Image (tube, rainbow, N blue to C red; front, side):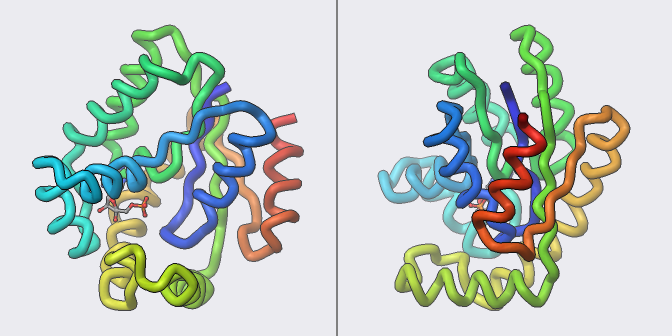
Length: 187
Ligand code: AMP
C-alpha cells in the first residue's frame, strides 16, 4: 500500500507516519528528513538545501524526485508513506509517472486538516521541546512555509480529489484520535 500524508507544516504528518511504520510495516519517506540528513552529513546537496530550507522555500523538484525514486527502488516493497511530498503539481506528476512505470498504485492521499493558528502554536512547541533542533522551526520561517503550502501545495488537493484517492481527517483532534481516523480509512 502506498499512501501520501498531506497537510501543512505542523499538521502531524511525521507523527502519524511513524505510527504507521510501526503498526503496518510501511516505510516512511520524508523528504524533509532526507534533506536534514544530507545537511547533517555536510554533503554538497545538504549545503545547498540548507539555505533554501532556512528561508522556508522549496528545494528544486529534480532533487526531490530523484531522492524519492532512489528509495522506492531500494526498500519500499511493502509500501511507502510519503510524508511532505509531493509539494508541487510538478512533483505530483513526476510521482504518478514513476509509480506507473513501476506498476505501483497510489492507494490513498490522507489530508490532515489543522487550523492556521494551531499550526503556529505547534511549531513553537516543537521548537521549544527540541531545543531548536530544526533551524526552520521559528515564526518567520514558518510564516513563509505556510505561505508556500497554501500557494504551491494545497492546489494538489483537487488534483487528488479528482483521482478519487483523497480522504481527510480532523487534525485538531488528539494524536490517538487522528490515528484511529486514519486506521478506519486504511481498513
Ligand atoms: P518538512 O520536514 O517536510 O517540513 O520539510 C522541511 C523543508 O524541506 C521544507 O520547508 C522545504 O524547504 C524542504 N522540503 C521538504 N520536502 C520537500 C519537497 N517535497 N519539495 C521541496 N522542498 C521540500
